[in-house]
Amino acid sequence: MPASEPIARPSARQLAYARIRDDIIGGRFAPGALLSENELAAALEISRQPVREALLLIAQEGLVEVRPQSGTYVTRIDPDRVREAQFIREAIELASLAACEPPAPEGERMLRAIIRRQRGAADRDAFYPLDEEFHRALLGLAGHANAWSAVSAAKGHLDRARYVGMSATRSVQDYVDDHERVVDALAAGDRDAALSALREHLRFVFADLDAVRAQHPELFDGAVPTRTGRTSRR
Image (cartoon, rainbow, N blue to C red; front, side, top):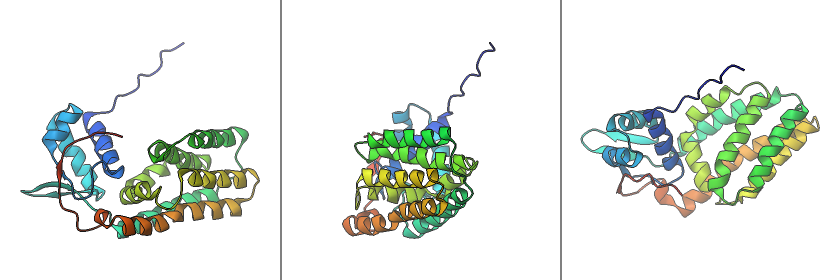
């Protein structure tokens, strides 16, 4: 048998981008925090150059702001960007689902396997990557897996709002129930019910956002910059 292709290891820039972005979305780097290239590089055990390049990529998503002669700051959550990203995500995911036929047995098994793993998620840290996996798989079911990159590129601020708000008004298992309703409707051949369930699921972010803004206004405005370069993970 031919030897399998070696799996390419992520570059230092890719590693820095993923870790720093995840820490911003997960709230480990709070809005207004001043990020230190030196401290980030030391924590990640890489040089400053890939960290600098990663921060520039993250700045393009509006998650950090690079201020000349001052530093790089984590931006506060921008409700307008949340709404814009929600519009893009909803348009792509609903259009994909509208073109989806009832899943073949292996497709349904894949989605239900993800849901079973989600049932075992005790908190949002465990659930969040499984939520991403489910929505990416749902796009793939209709042959639109490559569209996930377009969704991901647009939804940095949306991810932050979803992550913080995930436990603000609903439990993690409420979101899993949403996923199950979508799959049940698809399996039953009821595309309209599947679309309605997915639309309602995606729009809960707005109720969550209002709850988070009421409980934690400092995430949106008025935060005082605090210096941190930690990449600690919960």
